[in-house]
Image (tube, one colour):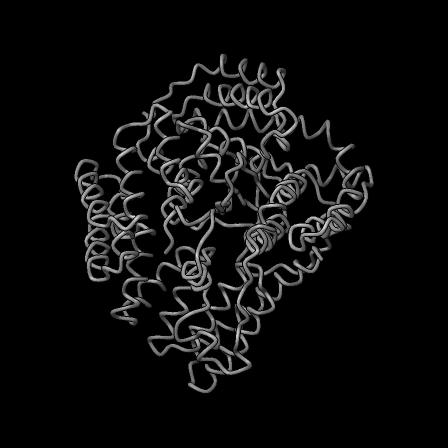
Length: 534
């Protein structure tokens, strides 16, 4: 497991190897132990290219949220286990939204730098779960992804996909402003702007969206300007026609987001304050505004409209300032300033950050710089002072694991899970630590975690290793296939299913065979949808 400070910047050869390992290329099922037919080529490090074209994918997310002409995306095969959406007015929305969004997310993971921080991921998932009951989004469990970028940005994609940059945490020094951005994105999803924009596009016969989708992904993946030019050529008429509608959608998302915030106990005034802060940023940065402001323009009329709505709400903000958020923000600051952790401390000190959050960041820096005892002592003290914050003992277990203190990590993980069962970051640490002591126990822990988090590639990467080490070869290749399809490598995932089937037939594992065939149908459905982006 990687600590947050290793997500965004330069890494040495050892760490680069570890990143490849976390993508699943290690252990019993590594290339060294596979036949030629089973070998998986290593992924190249494309981080610089990903950074250059991340904005293109952000624009793609916006366009997906606005409209997609059905003539361009004839998605006639629906993979199993994907729900349909029904809005508050009982107007059915087809599984196309879900399928398109989830398929896009797999392509996004293959091309954009993903911030793999299970603790921050757990916080974001918990936040979305708190906000969701106050939205009109029903019948679906949203999927969130963290992007390893210091740019201020967040986006929503049809099918319940929400993306958040590390830079959003750094920008928002309190929880409520950050929540306002997430609530706004939930507003887009709740109002089904994709489906409504799609209908508008069909009425006006806007040029095919397929060329834009393909061009955006080409630009993001190839590093050339050819794809971007092709995309923009198809996008021009689309954007011109949709501009007025996009402004309307932004206001609708604002209104819905304000209601979501108030319902969940957050002060909706924080959204207006966030808008004003962004407006000041535009003035300071001139022609180079943050990514979020390129797709979510902030105007004085929009701010005034939001303020008027807040004034009429008379909301009772019952939520207190969140220390948990400040701890997550500390992780984001360290991720952004991983080349010079002291810059993270300096930046945190400029804000009115609680002292315990400062101590937490210093403990993370101590761990990064090899002062393990100091880090663990500080984290244990914080854990005793804040026994309800699961991330504190989880961080300590993670620090112990990364320092090679395997037995300590196992003991810490098991102790916390007895007190706070089901906390995913701790379960992941325990599973990874058990790999070095008891692969069978690791498999059981990680298998349950994978059932609970079927969209997490990191879980399946570790599960594949645990299966390989515990003589569950067919299940190991199946887990590897899941990890590959979740990260956009669908063809290689299907190849792993073929290997898994062969092994299952040789060993007579009928349960594995049934599961492999079930998943093959879903994989083929995703591949068919992915072909529409090419």
